[in-house]
Length: 189
Image (cartoon, rainbow, N blue to C red; front, side, top):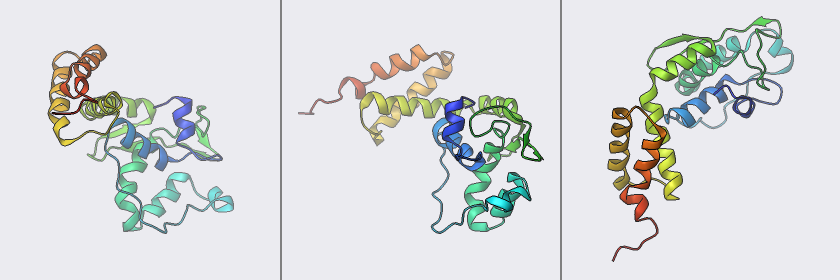
């Protein structure tokens, strides 16, 4: 989550984006993507307007619109936890003239402060992470999206991972030994 490549991918060319970073964490690590944005949402003001208030303050104004708040209340607080990293992934304590406030909350209400606090809260969300990783690796291994019939295998493997200490070898073995993997590409007679 704090790799330069991820931080750059989830930023704009000239500034960070708590929105993009929070969305990336929700989608790619926790498997809980926010709903799609409604059409015709205006962008945050840039240029002179960007120097009169911190990015956090500007996003607070954006979230004042109830249509925007539905998604941004989920994404922004998580993305703020990564604000100590600039658009290229370098550490910073200030964004221009504003001190970086890297505190945030998860949708369930758990608060954290800074990247280390975010990392610890992510560890507390390990059930979501493990399920998401299992689903993504199953999808990759099968070469197709998951279907309703795959849910039992995923659920069973998540339980097995928990019981056996979340070892990667257990995850890979479970996927390879699954009926879905062993029967992939074969036509049912």
